[in-house]
Image (cartoon, rainbow over all chains, first blue to last red; front, side, top):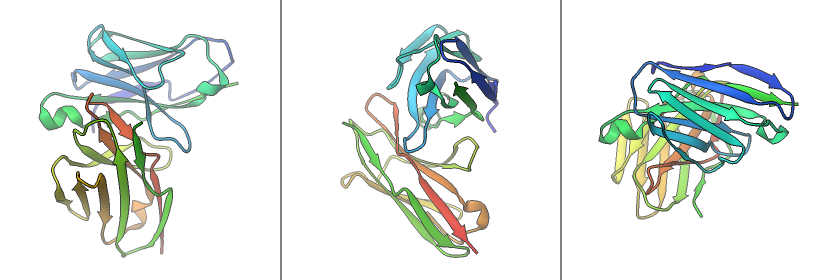
Length: 115
Length: 109
């Protein structure tokens, strides 16, 4: 199994508070991703990173920011949480090479509830 | 727009064979992926197709027709542990994965 750790695994917070989710990998992979998963929807990309300090927006980036100061850590921040951000958040990583670069491996997920 | 369609739910019997279909319309194509996701767990990689044809891996096979924008995942000799959601995803021209909503497979004894 790919060495990916997400923390916290569960979080309950109040509307308007900032929240930071952490993804830590031990695989030294270049690419890291944050997704959210909601019932009736496919996984939706929030932000991704292609190297230290190199990040870009995904399909649903509004209200989220990310940072990657080290290869192994990718942080997702909800600046001011809203109830619409209640979701399960998954971090994923992928490596180098033609096929390996394209296969994404997922962390266990963080279940976030915004009340 | 980009779209991935797969059935919401399917039911099959233990020991039988089931085929889960996926159709797609995307901006470019750099491969099609199937993932398995048990309830409350992370998606796990099953298969990758980039050329037309069938890829076999044990009890699981995946087929791709790029001209038809179509793929299927074939599961043989179904086991109770195969009860899960199966996610179809296509990598577009920007190398981003576009995901279907998943097919929940229920296995009955």
